[in-house]
Length: 342
Image 1 (cartoon, rainbow, N blue to C red):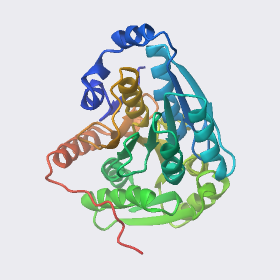
Image 2: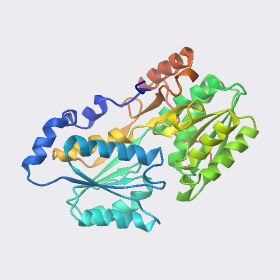
Image 3: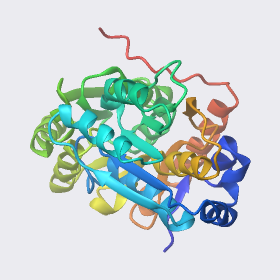
Image 4: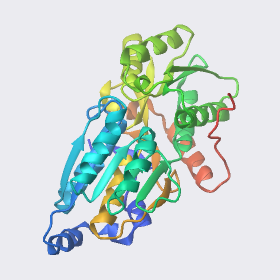
């Protein structure tokens, strides 16, 4: 069965960034006329390629652009923190046209390297750099998509207790937590939301053992649906749900197939389509630095429905989330992005 998704990105988000982004075939011709191969470099975040989440979404968008526009793509997987700047600098020094840092942890490194290579176009995912003309900052309203999966969690829970497992305890992940709690509370004010984080260092995104420990603890306290925003760490959350007969909610990529029947849905964050659009603009010579934001209105976030989870979502659940999505887009509901805790 073909995968379907609520609030998935189609041509709209591509056209939002550039009208030219809606016509890939012509771009290849324009690129060929330059007589030089266009090159894109991608430096992964913690967890790397194969995380079935954030990094894989970034890779999918970049790889799709490589196929459609006949360009060269090179990826780099950093080890320690300093390797982020090393990877960016190597690609820029070798004359890559676009260099991408996948994740907010690249903010300082891109600020430094972009200043040294003003003729290279840089892309920062999940971070924002003001006043740097050759950097496009891509950010998402994760709290809006998290609100919708919070609604689903509250409607699906039989215990009235649900969980949230974050990776690194930072403001970006707090947006997922805040939106999720708001969604749960919107339909079930008496519900309990248990919250746990894997740590305060970047490694908190790559520790599935810790993710499983937190999830098992929440299950022991009555949680029967647990949403993770934790990268590779979240794979441990999904495994705990599968083992104990509970439900997990995936993040970033469609993780429904990681444990079919044990994943209620996934909060999709369309890093893939956002990167595809920026690369398409760059290939056409229309790269623009600055901030670009994606939420429900831009189809930049949403949740997934496919053959692995459609039996878990009732018609009432789908109708309710669709109506609430429309209310958020219309501005009738403003989803909080801060947790209120210090």
